Length: 553
Image 1 (cartoon, rainbow, N blue to C red):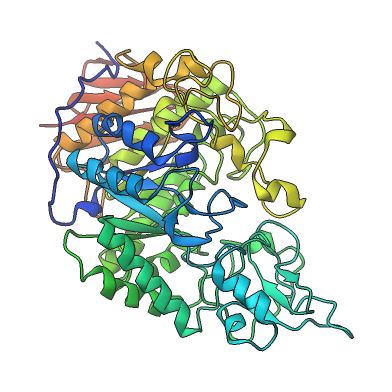
Image 2: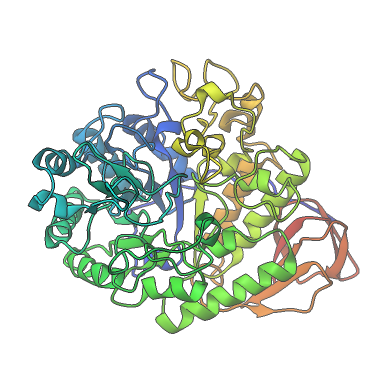
């Protein structure tokens, strides 16, 4: 008997769910607003575009929507350089649009999580402009990290820290002082030792909570606090240490007091609002510190995202994650793609060991097959899962963008990050045809590939075997199966080399990461499979790079 996933009917309209601990098993969909949907034909996505597409997200079956930054910003780093945390940038709309989006989402049973950028501001923020104007020794400069330089005439940076985007992490101003920016020069770091900074961000939290948002994703949550005295690192290739070693500007213990204070603010509000940390740490055990009961609710699992498609490596990171989260009572999170890394359909199309930013397309068929299997594995694990816009369409990274259209600031700084993040930010296709395949009426801010229409929502809707219908089916089954979702453990089953198999109550997941078909027990009734499998005489033949779900009930 042959089994393959099939198209699922669109789910019925859901009501606003207020179940307790919703975030422990939530599937959260990341929207990158400038690339999701354009309502006014200017080539740039906006909040009204997102609002119009909310029914699609409801029908997909997600629980919440995380919006990347839409605040007022000069856009030096795609909105992660914020000039005003209480205003919407005109390219995305205005506060009335944000209010309407939040209200409509709640009416559809969706929660809204917004990005918050507390490590740094824009150099066009009023605080920073005042600091520049008032000069050395002014109280305004204490809200950032201004320092005199080294060398005979202060011509050298205050320490040897390097920017994540390449080059020194310091820029000199006209009066001779230097200011710290761990990212672009247009993104000066706040000094979190100054009480005004903490006061301001607690006020910002209340502003958006009063607007009705359901939570915050905290950008660079491992940043904020720097080691006392800003000591030298003593290494000329610091970027290789990121996420692998202790750094004096990341993952300092003092950051946890900031989040304990924020948690007090959040808990003043009804409706189980949440914090999600983007925290790159050397170990998953360090990540667990951010989700202790009096701090944040979730932290992204970058160790999992960075793991190759290999059964042994995947099992190790799954075990470490669950073991680290269990003592603090926090849910594990699982993620495969986001706006900062190469889409997993392309990462898995390339040989292992190339990292999370890849410049080559690889084997498209292989990458998509593995990506589909990896998605079913991720959605079967205990905890919460994140989906990045367009992955449900099986979109690859666009690796051949012309240099002249790129906007990633890291690309222009020569060193640092590879600077090829634009490839995962190309506007997504909604229709088979049109100037931007349904993204908007006026083209798109990044060029889309010629084959984008065949990967569109329109082209895949209702088509058995399509990646979109696989996601819809998987999210429906995940809701229906009582043993899926929240939890803190899996029961590993014996499996051939290159295969992961585990049980959760009456649910069984088997993922074949090997390059050839394998024979496993047929564990019961097939719920879903990422590819075609056959069953006979109590056994199942699982093709290469395929995941299957069974129920023993």
